[in-house]
Length: 48
Image (cartoon, rainbow, N blue to C red; front, side, top):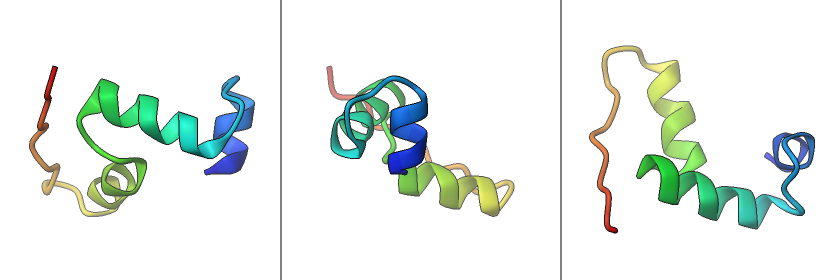
């Protein structure tokens, strides 16, 4: 995840993960797992 964070302009993986979770309602890990198992996309839990 560090490589993705740095390539997309985030200073570190922790900040990328925080922003990703706020925007999608999912952690990067949960998103990746859902992509690996099609049809099992977890529901978003937005708390704004």
